[in-house]
Every structure is written in C-alpha cells, then in structure tokens.
Length: 593
Image 1 (cartoon, one colour):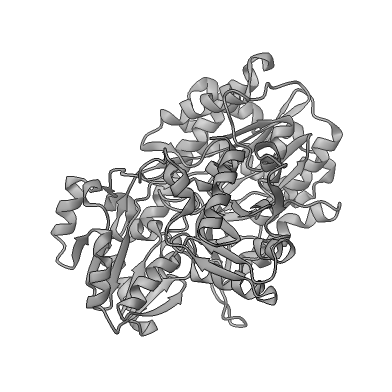
Image 2 (cartoon, rainbow, N blue to C red):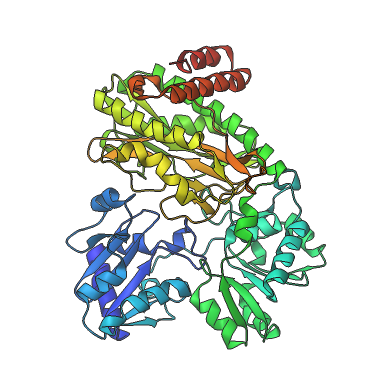
C-alpha cells in the first residue's frame, strides 16, 4: 500500500473512532531508541527511517516531527505534499495542534507507546484550545498494517561476570539499598538496558543493541520477579535464575496478578520508560505509583574496574581495525571507492577482532553532501562515489563482550580546500578543549558543552546535536543519564563513559565530525580550600587525525602539544598490536605537527 493510500485508510479509522487526529511516535512499549521491525510505525506510515520521529495525522493535514540530525534525510524520504516537515525542538506537536486543529479537537494516542510525562506535557500545552488527548487501546496503525512483523524473539543469554565485574546479587543489593533510602516498597524496571544490566543478561531483540525486552519488579526485601517470554531464555539463563532463591520468572501476562499481590504498596516507576497502559494496570490493582527516574541508570553509568579494563582492551582492538581501514582507504584508487565499499571494508576488519559481536550502530560512511547529514543512512543502491576534493566522514563502532566502541574520523580525498581546513580545525579545537577539560565534581554536561562549541560560535557557526552521549558496556551505544549537551543537568561522575564529538555541517557540500570516547576520572583529590575533587577525562580511542586537514596557524601551543602527545601515545599503544606494514603506515600518519 502506498503512503497516500495508507493515510486515506487511517483517516477513515479516525472517523470510525470519532477522533480528529492521531499521534504516531517512533516508539515501543519501553521507549527504546532502537526499535524492532514490529514497532517501525513511523516508517510504515511516512517512509521516514530516522531514529527520532513522530507523525501526526489529522483529517485533512499531516506532519512529521524530527530533530536537526534528520531534517535533510526527512526531506529526501517523505512526500512533502502529504506531510509538513517540522523541527521538533523548534515546533513540537503541541504547537502544531494549536495552529492546525480546531477548538475541542480530540487527538488519539496509544497508551502503550507514551509515558505519563509526555502526555501530561502535551495536554497542558493544548489546553488553551480545549483540545483533548484520548487513549485508544487498539493501535490504529496495527489495524492497517496487514503484514506487520511479529514481536522479536531473540535468544537471551548470560553476560559473564568476567566481563560485567559484578554479580546480579550484588547489583540487586545496591538497588535494594536505594529503595530503602527512598522509602518505597519496590521498583518496576521498564528500561530493557536496566533489566539486562541488573540480571547480567544480554538479548537480541533489536539490531546492534544486545537487549531483551521485558520487565522486572525488585522489592525492598530483595525478592525479584522477571517478566519475559520464557521461550527466549537459554538453558544457562533458566538454570542461573532458577538457582537464585530471590528470583522468579513470569510471563508479562501475569503482571496484573503480581500487581494485585502488591496492592497498597508504593512502587517506583521510571518516568522516561514506563508507559501509561502499565501505570493504569498497576493503579487498577491498588498500586501507589511513585514516578521518578530509575536509580539504576546512575548505577549502570559508573563503570566498575572490570568493566573499564574491558572497555580499554576493546578500544585498543577496535583502533587496530580503524587504522587498518584508513591504510586501505588512503592506498586505494579513489575511483574504486564508494561509501558502501568503504563501510563494508571497515566492518570486515572489525569482524576479525576477538570478542566481537557485531556493530554498535549502523555505520555512517559519507562523502560530499551526504556527510552534511549528521546521521546519514547508508544504502547500497544509492551509496555515493568518492571524488577528489571531497571529505569522507566515517562514524562506526562495535559491540564486544568486554565493551562498546564508537569513533568518528574525517579523511581528505585529494586536496582539501582552505575553507574545509579552517572549519575542520575549528571542530578539532573544540574536541581538544573537551579532552583538556578540568572540572570540579558536580559539574554537568551542560556546563562543559560550550567548551566544544566556542570556536565555532566565534565564527557564527554551530551544530544541531549534542557534543557527547553516554556509552554502555556491551549495551546501548547511547546511554543515559550522562551527556555533554546544551540541556544535560546530570553531574559527571567517575567511571562514566562519554563521547566527545563536535561537528560542522555545510548543507549540500560536506560534513565534519571528530569523535573519541572518554571516561571520567579523578585528577586531584579535594584540597583544604575546596571540598570538591577535580575531574578530567581518560582517552579510550587511539586513532590519529588527518593532518592534511589541520590548519596549524589556528592552533594554540597547548593544542599543538596535545595533538603531538596524543599521536605519540597512539604510536606507543598501537604499534605492538599491528604488523610491520600497518606499523609503518601508522608512523607515517601519526606525525608531529
């Protein structure tokens, strides 16, 4: 069915259900960033494939909302005769409702795909026109979607303590202590990453992120109930969980019975991942919801020594693959290079690495105007041919049993222009500024973010994405709560892993982004005149920059010293891991400037 026909069929359902519009989020019941094929409703109704998008269909209008990372892609993928394209940060759905729908309009939504916080915000903002949000138990898109894929049934396996560094029992003690401090009776775990971290499990329900969909309830006495499809559990998982006297396994269909047994108790639900349908089920059985941020996010973000050692080892292996790729790329005739062949070669190098499980996200392999799309999606049929005078941006990572990697570099194809070098150096200066940052404990990502943007700002430039995201340990490559961004108010703590990736994008021309992963560490303990310790960053990624793109005249002495020191460290750490030819190549590109 073509998009136009799908919209017409949906509008007939709007009439049938007596609503004026429908909100369709790219979301699942857990608010996951990467969703299974059975939850790709935005793609089904609009053709848009970005990881952040919401569609709003009214009786005579429709709109797609996404952020600055995907606006160029959305223009290419959607029919703008059907959909108005809106930047969700500048013009969110509630504003569109006020501008395009009549007074007292009824807007339907699926309560399984929205959190109470999301619906509360929209409800408040559309109240001036007396518009109303209406929960519809039957998802109208699913009624239309005749060939909809079934729910994911990926196998669930144990994540060995030699990689996790801490047993599930020890993690549950931390959770139990947190519940007692908060004076709540139990916690309902709705984020799959937190479920997997807590019980040392890994799954295969979505591509590239080893999570398993399910829920859990942990009571303040330590009793734990996991709600997951038992068919997905490996024999080893079943044995491990059944041998744990505190844990019982249930199907999700048993949730109302368990809620009834916990009637009258105060249970913590995560405000960012709990859906309205589940909250209603809990309330109907007498549960007292306490909707806050799940404390497991913070526990999970502060990696233990075993995890950090694993991450360091994973990055060293990963860096060998990237260095080998760079050698192949720079030694190959440009006329034989396409975005697709480059991505496949890089992935082939990673596949050779020990403990490798697969990519951590879809590889971004982009040249020319494609690189100006911050989250460009590669396609074999439309992959660009590399040409002299262009920039080539590649952003990729791997999932390893001992850690998750993510790195971005830009390579000149032929001779770069002075403008390219100027803007690359602006981005590099911001990137170095984060590396060099020293900050007191309690500092947030929001406070560090301007360090990366300052040099672009001085030229009237900026980028429409965060400077850095948190990274999981063989879990999601995008992990909260830590971030370096204009809005993040979460203090950075020792053991947190973050990316450092400022960028610049010139539409229809080229894109620049430089990314390393870092881990927060203590630089200096508290002094007599300050109770706060001083933190900084340890570098995890060890791949040189393209010196042909650096305009040395723009750099300060400390920035030059940092680049030279970083390149020297790369040669020292990486040379023993490379053969003689790759070692010679590394020494030729990781030079001093």
